[in-house]
Image 1 (tube, rainbow, N blue to C red):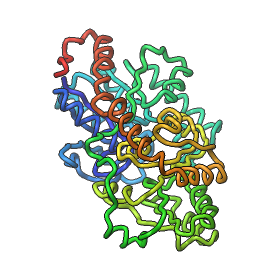
Image 2 (cartoon, one colour; image 1 turned 30 degrees about the vertical axis):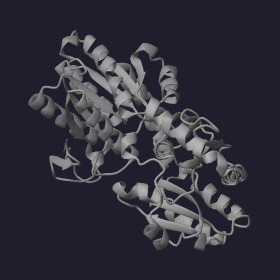
Image 3 (tube, rainbow, N blue to C red; image 1 turned 90 degrees about the horizontal axis):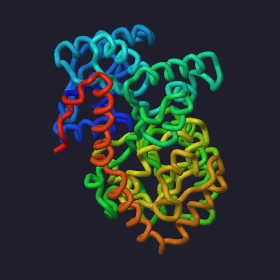
Image 4 (tube, one colour; image 1 turned 135 degrees about the vertical axis):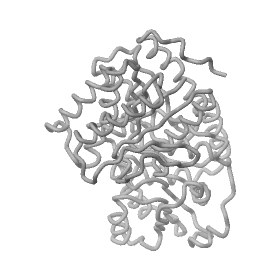
Length: 405
């Protein structure tokens, strides 16, 4: 079976989106399926029609800079049509956003090819988070209508978590057309309970320190301002405390200014972005990770990857009790939850974890076991077989689905 994947962006760019995509593709190859991959103009300006990244070949959609959304979809549709003619896929699998789903459905309908739409987040809520619209605005309502239109016209729908499944059903989509393919990790790629690199610890000035940390993109919804404030409150109780901020993003300058204003600039270390292959080295320096996501519609509905990565490594962490975290984390068993949006609750939860280190070995082991048992990519990607069978059945083409080996 040959599947044409339509993607917003891909490797070599690094994001939770691209890491999920790469994992899906590799597991599908392990099942004996052939995949073809196309990114839209959202990949960034380029005149290349294809690019190799980490052993995967991605076809691109060249476009002038500042191309409008309608023009982007037209260009994407044109490239999909070209690749359908060249590779004759059995199925088109479009991944969020709806800007990918609509062109895929146009070509799928014209070429009589089944289309699966994977909604990883709703387009309208992502726009609110990026600050390009507000909830309930005209743009928000139009975006939601387009998302709902795409969902109604896909042969099958997948999504990443129960929160989004509920949102899709609330749009009037029948439950039997929706399948959750949850985020997961390749547990074998994470070393469980590894000791910190002493040279890196010294380089960052962390010798003898209690280290709090965050690794990822510095977006507003991550609530990292709360983490800076919580660190300031904990400083009197833990004179050796430090906050290690691994990554970067739109909030970095404001977080640096906040640390200075709260008198802890010397306690907050910003590493900048680091190669993905080296991120674990930084994880290993951190005593307690923190994921203080704010309680907004996006975080209530969508599950992140970072806590799963922490569990796979046996790292201790505290996370806010937004819906996306509650779906992943078993409080007191695989990690700890605290009230979202509260500096006091975050600081108290971190202090409680630091004061009860005797619990750490059991929680680390339980977290790793949870990932190995329930959240491996092999288990998640195996669910596509039934999704694809149903989509192909809509077009009377079930026979093209090869048996899973």
